Image (tube, rainbow, N blue to C red):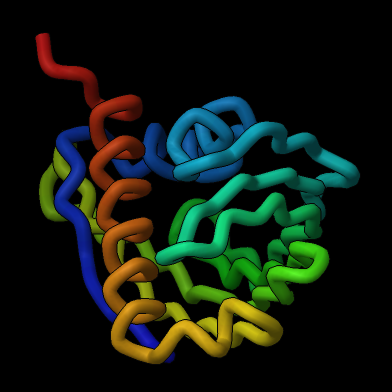
Length: 149
């Protein structure tokens, strides 16, 4: 499954970059995230609880940042195990573009793979849930990075 989109964020490129690298901000924005901690400057460990159709699972996993080009973007790679529910792994290329000094466009190209019970739910349910989760993350991220006054 692949997703490409962009989000217009009313904040400077430097502020958006800093937020993309702040585990506390990411934890607050990732749907179902219970914990997210830095293990090293390029690795984070996370616990996320997700419900996809009838399957609810707690995923424990690792997120790695590669191809870091501060403050322009990076590649994020994650994988997690959800016990009997299965596994999820994927990645995204994130690129920041300054539209103006106070407006940043965040572009992303993401791909994901799932296995186990989750994979049996059907591609349309998985696709729609993935798109909803991505939309929720970026909506939350934009509101945290650039709260309305």
